[in-house]
Amino acid sequence: MESRASGARKASLTKPSGPTTIERVTRPFQEFSESEAAGGVLLLAAAALALAWANSPWAESYSTLWEHKFTIGFEGFALSKSILHWINDGLMAIFFSLLA
Image (cartoon, rainbow, N blue to C red):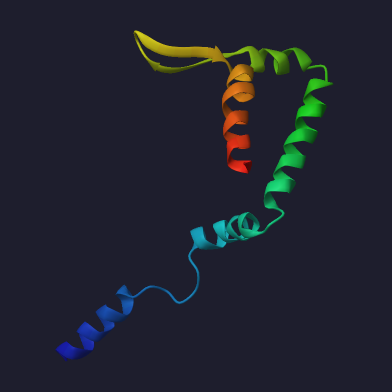
């Protein structure tokens, strides 16, 4: 009798055979990110969104976003520049270093 009860307990503790909810939700994103076109599609979508936003009635908020200060460091030693400056000088340098 004891072996039947322990067998039933072991069976109930095993992982279900199908994918979990999280796996079902994240699988399309994983498949998209593994495709070669993923970066190009995201870049194109971001450019289209930026063009639409910059030419909309909310264009002032778009330019205010780029002028926002972003600080890296701690008190006494910090770099505080606009987001536009960080992208133009920092991220573009990293990008072209990776290409070289």
